[in-house]
Length: 152
Image (cartoon, rainbow, N blue to C red):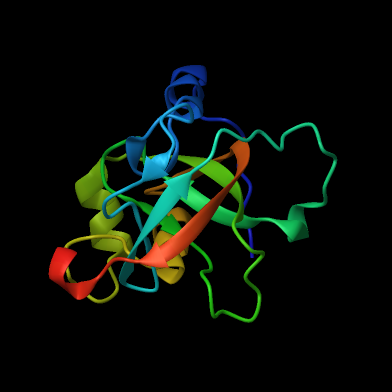
């Protein structure tokens, strides 16, 4: 399920458009450290210098990553081993926090671990109005691997 909202601010979109998962730039390909969460588990990536924005591929052929603009790690909806995983094709959604991060945690941190780290938590914060999905700002490909327990 994707919740679409009207763009909050151009500044938030511009800031997020330059961000790839975990803050690494597209040009800096390589294995990242812990980059994003999927269902409360940390994953890392190998960034690639790809841009799939002009392909015309349907939305359902991508998985979504919700980018908080550096306030916290991003949250993705799928990963390898999930039945609906699209093989590392991603749409990055810019997320803004109109009432601040603490309000988003209060309404979205369903397991009370101090971070939004699952899709249901992001959606809870969006439903409460404490997070806003400003839409897709980037389409690209990168691999996804669980962060080894010794590095999380």
